[in-house]
Image (cartoon, rainbow, N blue to C red):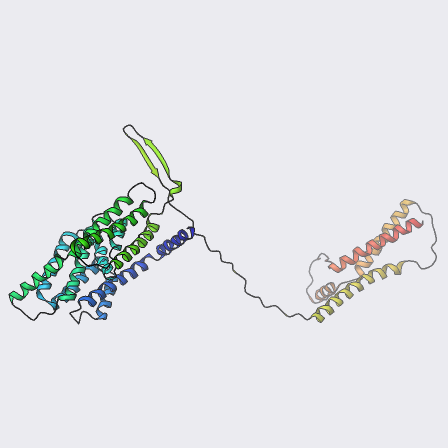
Length: 430
C-alpha cells in the first residue's frame, strides 16, 4: 500500500511541475474526442465533418477556456441538424438556448460535466459521471448531468431516424418537430437513466459525508449497486430492453474510477483516528479527527563516477637506473666525508701525553673549529659553484648571507658526528 501512496506523491509532484502542459493536453484531447463523436454520429454537413475541421477546432479550444469548447460543440451540432432538417434544427436550437440561459451561463464550471456525459454514453460507461460528480461536486451538478444526457439522446435520434428533408411545407416541418419531441423527451430509457443518476448520486454523496470509517468506499459501492437496481427495475416496469452485461460492467468500472479518485482526494488513516471534545460558554463540541496519509517520496541518490584517467606508461628499466644513480651519488658523498676524517687520523703509534682537562678541552674546541671550517669551506655543492660563477659575471652587490645546500648540511652533520665519536674514543684511551 505504501508503494501506491509513493506513486501518488510522484504523480502529484510531476503534475505540479508541468501542470500547464497537462491542462492543455487534456483540453486538446477532450475537444478532439467531442468534435469527432459529433461528426461520426450526425455528420450531415460534409464540409464540417472533415477531420481537418475537428483538428483545427481542437487546437483553437486548447488555448481558450473550456466553455469555448461547449459553445463550438453546440454550433457544430446545430450546423449538422440544419443540414438534416429545419424542424430538427429548430427544436435543437431551442433546447440549447434554454440550457444556456438557465444553467450553463450561470455555472460555467459545470461545462466539463456537460461534455463528459455524452462521451461517457458513447463509451458505454455512463455511470462514471454521477459517481465522479458525487465525489467531487455538489448536488447542483445533477442539472449538468441531465443536460448532457438529453444532448446524447438528441444525437441518437438524429443519427437513427433523421434524414435530409426535401420538403419545405409547413405540415412537413410540423411533423418533424412533433416526432422529434416525442422521440427524445418521451424516451423511457433516457428518463430511467436520469432517475438512476439522481438516486445513485445522492446515495454516494450522503454516505461519503458521514463520519463512519471508509465512508467513501462504502458510498461508491452502494451507489453503484443502487444504479444497477434502479435501471433493472425501471426496465422491467416500463418494458425497456437494456443490456445488463454493459450495465454491470459500466458500474464496476465506475467503482474502480471512484476508488482512484478517493486515493487522490481523500486519503486518510482510520487507524489513527481520535475523538476530541471542546466546549465554550454555550456549546459542547465532539470532534472526530482523522489524520491524512502522508508518506515522504524517497529521493533518488545518483553516484557520480569519475571519468577514466589516462595513465602514463613508465619504463621500469629507466626508473631502476635513475634510482641506482641517485643511491650511488649519495654513497659517494658519504664516503667523501668519511675518507676526509680518516686522512687526519694518525697512522703511526700514538703517544700518550698527560694534559690538564681544561687545556685538553680548549685544544679540542680549536681542533673542532678548524676541522669543521676546513670541511665546510673546502667542499662546495653544484648549486654553490653555479652561484659563484654567476657572481663573477654580475655586478658587485652587498654581502649576501651564505646558503647551504641540503647535501652540505647532511655532510656537515655526518662529519661532526664522526669527529665526536673519535674524540670520545680518544678520551677512553687516555
